[in-house]
Image (cartoon, rainbow, N blue to C red; front, side, top):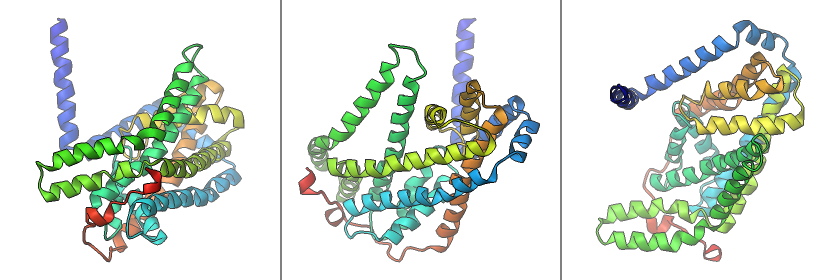
Length: 342
């Protein structure tokens, strides 16, 4: 009997896997619908409607105003990374267009992975290299989310297990600050591999190494200097939105919001993660006396303000902007390593 169940579960696993491969968009839309159906079953529509009716507009206004520093931090961070690693250096305007276009490209993908294609809006440079730099840019956002999520997790699990998230966070920071030291070893392996590859493939591998070039100690510190304030702005923005629908102390917000973000980033299964964050908000804030209606409404509102609206703007940018230059950047001109940061 156990073997029959095991075979059945394996069959279901491969069936779902094949369905996701063949119909990724349909499956992701279905996941969003299922998650929202479960949420509405647990949180009544009347409760959600009551939360919107009792909303305090001033807090929503504060959250909308915070979109200005929110976006500026993303623009400056991306431009900083491009200037450090691309030659010729892209303008700030190009960086802004690239980020906005990336919002649109990431709108239909789990975890917004479509943003990796934002490099197509940066003319005159290798698309492989700009994709690898995008991984670095998005990676820092996720890194900060992990670190603060692990810190918040250490406050809710019992001693001595609470030390585990702290230790993991310290380990991540240590690895990040020293990963640039592995660059010579990686390059040595690549050069050895080059003997067996064509020049085109070698150039692509060189451009792919941009991620390692971007992880020099100076660049890491610079990226952290942008990523941490961005996280605080994003978190305070969510706090303002929650206050729009219900009361929540700032101390409690500091303990719970990082956990919501942490759960959201660990489950990149739906389009724009719609449904996942709402589910996390309801279950994380619920034990602290926040009703499901305000929790659901707060998360949905932030998703609309910080994801849906920028994605629509990005779609307009992506539609009307056409790069002036289309040639690929050669690895010899494009791959820049700062000697002072080796």
